[in-house]
Length: 404
Image (cartoon, rainbow, N blue to C red; front, side):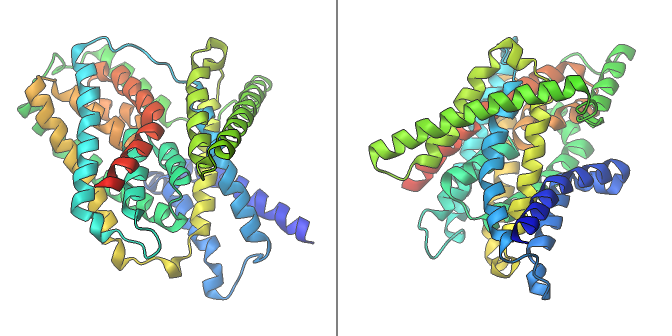
């Protein structure tokens, strides 16, 4: 009977994200909330049924949660990196904006730690605030996969991850609304503006096509013969990367006799995933990124189900909310000032900031809001760089914050 319950739980965690994605596409209000936020709510409800006196398979649940929690992110990392295309920046503004935007995020992270670090505490971990800062570095240089990777690497509790990710979505939604409503206009008055004021019919058509592409079902065609063949190749390569990374991390961990397995494991997955992306047949595999993203959806559901709401100190979480708010809007202000000094144009600055703060999937939407087709490629390119360096930078920021 235990095996049957385990199978049922695994099936529930694997299939619920597909149902949520389908509902998000059917209902506009749910789509605006987003699949990850929705999955957090669903996961929290599943994990806290015991609070209502209705425990869900109490013996099998922790085992299934731990199993899926430990394998989803490591499998997702290489899958999401295989399709990356690294291009040399072809303009001065793009390169300067990428560097200055990254510097702005790092400064905001450090300043935010100095301001709010004393409010982000744990009775058992003196480096708790530094771990949170390292985890947030992943979110604001890469995206959810980096944030989840660093959470694993640094051992941030599941409750803290869910709480920080929820606050992140609230603050980032506010940030996007500011940009779309008045922010873009303000920055165009404050910073140089390149030729775009009247978008041509061709530009409008391309932007509409890119937005439609971003909004379409990325899994369409996955279950055809060609789609399954591509998925199988992606998974086979991912398992190989996983195995090599696991072996190297195990050997190093034993050699130095220190608890650094997870750190080496995640960094090896990242490095091998980037390396594989330079192999053209690997880079051309369809669905690898989208399958990796689906694994992140599963992880989001599982990790939310592991969060015991009765143990979350919402009153004490004000520091995390303040930290995230300062990072998001502080980095935006700093980036604008850097752009003014370096004479970077407004739209390149905005799209870079959006790429770092909200991740590349939001680039087509903001490009459409600006009616500027020319920022699509730099925005996506910068996002790829962010995915690639996010895990490394998160570890470095944690080490820096630990000594402040």
